Amino acid sequence: MLLTLPWLSLALPDLTSAIEEQMRRAAAKFAAGESRTAVHLGGELACDDRGAPDAAEDVMRHANVSFQFVSGIETVDEARYATRDGSVVCVDHAARHVSFRLNRAVFDAPYSTWTDLFAAPLAATWRHHGCFPLHAAAVAFDDGTSVMVVGASGSGKTTTALALVTAGATWRADDKVLLHHAGAGLLATSLYANTNLAPQTIAAHPHLGFALARPPLNETNEKRACLLRELGQRVDLSPFAPSALLFPIRVTRHTSSFRPISTIDALLRLAEQSPTSGDRTVMRRQHELLVTLARRAPAWEIEAGSDVLIAPGSFARALRDAVSHHAVSASA
Image 1 (cartoon, helix red, strand yellow):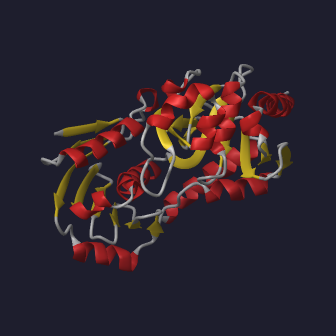
Image 2 (cartoon, helix red, strand yellow):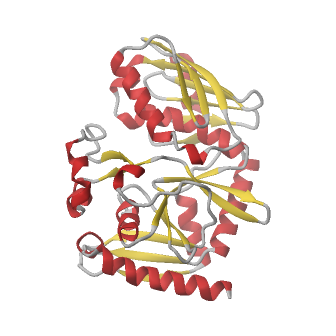
């Protein structure tokens, strides 16, 4: 069987139906047709009952980069990643080839464990070729302002973006984008075609009620997965130039507030949400790109209250007016 994603063509062995279904879920998540880049990997996957325990132990001992469930060693020529169950992934940058040797037990772990095994080699390849992942949602207003909502899981990125889209903005990305230089400027490209919605967010938007019938992502995450195009709003996943940055934090009061933050503060927050490499040359290029973004895009901290869910229209209008006015003034 061949699993084809926008950035990866992977030869698969005969798998159980349950494992194959999980693999297809990953394909649906990544398969945003408008988001293809020139960076592409080929490879193969093998499953057995033990994985490669010695190789995994070596990676764990010398790791210079880590994801939530994966540790790795990244160098100029290659990258190797492992999980504690003995699953191993190896990437040859020159050949643009990735090989997976997975312990079957990894498919019984939380969903995020084995999805990290896909994300890690992809992230290493993108960084090697000048594309840097950032944990962010994004929307565009009709006046041409494109804002990225940046933050960790649970900070309110999707809820904030959904409020803006409900008020007439267009989805540009959710959860992850790839940043890359384009001439003298930079562009952001949607990484995923989907979004993961929390039950309270679904409940606040009646037209999203269909998502409650879907199973939670896994036993540790109650969010429901939906394709962005299922949500009934405008979607454009083509590359865009960010013109503003929003950093949401959750508060307990009703009314949200927002305040401009400095370039240095924005840079520090961006760096927290962009996974780093173990290769110093790649890290320097990543830092230069994030500096460019922080300098060119004005930034706000949003203290997101309950009005983001209860009154998304009024929340979005106030925020949109401030962001649009500042962005237009800065470009004049």
